[in-house]
Amino acid sequence: MELLFFGLGLLMVLLGVLGAVIPALPGPPLSWLGLLLLYLTKAVEMSMSFLIITCLIALGVYLIDLFMPAWGTKKFGGSKQGSYGAIIGVVAAILIPIFGPFGFLIFPFLGSYIGELIYNKSSKNKLKSAFGSLIGFLAGTLLKLVLSIVYLVYFVQYTWEFKSDIF
Image (cartoon, rainbow, N blue to C red):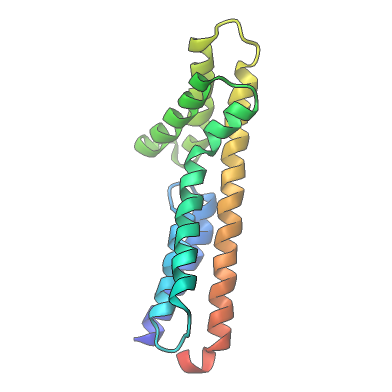
């Protein structure tokens, strides 16, 4: 049973790293599931507080990532309508998977641009704020990737420390 939990945990952590760059997969939560599965083995001694804190961080980063395109739009001079458009674009990318992972680049960009177009027809910042949504998306992806790699390192560290008990 230990080996099964270890194998599934390793799979989840690796899928989490992959999911950090493929928007269809929730990277940090999958990585955290890997840590949880490792915790469930009797061989690894991991504190419950560590598990709770890493869970809260994973959920926080996952939620922050959803709003990063709107934040980028705002930081690049966009209006509230441009930010709302970027959020609607993220939701559209989730609900309309026709473009696959590229939908998470395209829809927030278009949503921000359309929001700016509707709100302020004369603004020269439409394209700039839409570009901000793209930057926000990339920043969120980087944040997810870093966290997922940190969780992979924790997984390997705990496994290495208790490898004789697992194998």
